[in-house]
Length: 268
Image 1 (cartoon, rainbow, N blue to C red):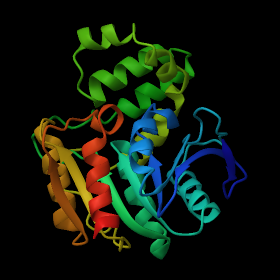
Image 2 (cartoon, rainbow, N blue to C red; image 1 turned 90 degrees about the vertical axis):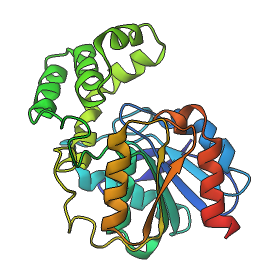
Image 3 (cartoon, rainbow, N blue to C red; image 1 turned 60 degrees about the vertical axis):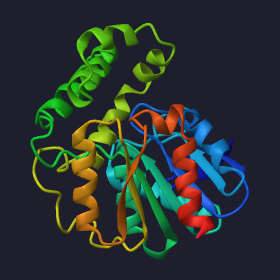
């Protein structure tokens, strides 16, 4: 573990593998850096892959309240500590965070690769309930973290209740419960992008980095319409479908994603 100090003094735990151009891996909700282990290893022959525990998770510290600005500053500090320029990769809500950072950090971000940011821009799935972030925060505050995580999986991710019940038996469930309070960061970065309305036209106006937004061919239609809407909004971003991919591919079977990143940012 290599500690990096963010702008507000918070220590962010980073993990480095490989050599070559720097790529920073930004994880999804409830995930620690080890969720990027397979992708990091797949990228290591061509890149210096840096994964990290987002603030409030794992070995990283936290300064409340949970603000999007602090998470962008964390990425800025990681990039600065590793040479000053980086490609950013983000999966799911981590993709939304990587996009936000790329739009704010200018030339420090040389490329962007997003995998399935969960934007809801039409009626291809119901929008998130407007009160979900508040209800989950209340459950965490009342020390009902398991119920908070269950509500997130059911209402935000659309996983049926019987499957969520089975997830309680998985080793990763306890980890999710421990970091349930950090869902506030994910709701902050996704605010205004999951209400079934068009994406905000000016939010990422500063985004200059070239890159890709990728969606697995087996994933739900709303991931595709959201990614296509983002590509239409940002000319430097190309929409790509990953044959056979699904929402868990970045964690479980990232070889196709790693190949696409390498082709886009090294082979070319």
